[in-house]
Length: 542
View (spheres, rainbow, N blue to C red):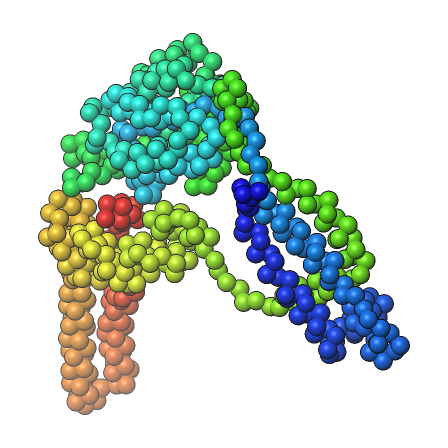
């Protein structure tokens, strides 16, 4: 018995609850509890002895004795007592999956936040977490294809390599999905167990390569499923320190093609789904090992010695003890102990479950998209908190948050927020600071020009309003002088005095009403072309 130990020793902490039951039993014996008004006497009789009758001086067995023994027995059984080893055949899932990740420049598009490639990497981590028992491989491609990891159960290695995968590390630029699928088929032929599958994570596949992919897949039993990253509307593709990718003077917009990817998957017997923030896409594509694949021995005769859980033998001892405790009313005491806890009102607390296992940069985009007001209260990093306030249209508060974000992107984001708040001069100063920190930040230069033009228009409107007010004052003075001169003429009739007083005033009132200045913040004082995507793209770059 030198090898005796518990497989799950934390279950032994249940023994700490026993003193609470005895404390409650003692309280029931010492004083009136108030339960008599709610519980019939015949049910309370086993719990509260009669202190005045002849039974008061008779010794009584505690109803908790049987329950305590059963409680101890169950706690030990749940802890998993073990003292022997036995050979156990090793099993593995008959499910092999090759993940094919697009690393072309279009994956840098910011139509989904923070960008397509970041979303795809997070989704691969989710897929690996759901497939710990299956075989997984990773292939990346751009102008050519490369194997990152062959088929393996070591998901941690794949996750560790995801962080360094960027389009800039690829030796050739392009979108040769056909070469990647061919590489994936070769990996499945070399080491797949059971029915092999391929999952392509991309935004679109060129028409020139679809026929080749279909031809290669039709020669095998493998299926191809696609996970669409991006939107049909598309978005620009920023490069670090270079700005957006352009075709001449025009910014290139990368658009996803979900219909084309769905058609490609259908030809090989697979399925297609748009990438989602939750596990809806994983469930729809049947990517988990519990949904597909059967279990088989890893190799013929291969086994491992594992400690055996012998706690189930104690259940035969616990069963009669539980029946005896029930008969003596011990479970009623347990119910009395738990009932006040269940009825005690508790203040409502908002618990951010995602914050328990996700970093702020991982959960911030989804949280901002769903509820920016709540995100502004929960997020702490200045960049993410400013983005949430910006999306909630709290522009002045967003500017204060972005003021704490370091670097050129912080000044750029602060300039956007100030422009939306109608503080155009301060916005221009923020853009100047951003360009001083990073002269190649084209977004800041373009927004500065927009805001400067809006400020000039605002100043011109103010000058026109001042000129109109001066003209109105001069007209009123002239009218007053004419009126004073008319009052000095003798013999003038009253009807001749009132008529010139009314008509000039009416003429003076019309320009002031039509030219009433719009001083409402954010209306007429902000650059309309400023968009949310430029702010988020800057946030990701920061």
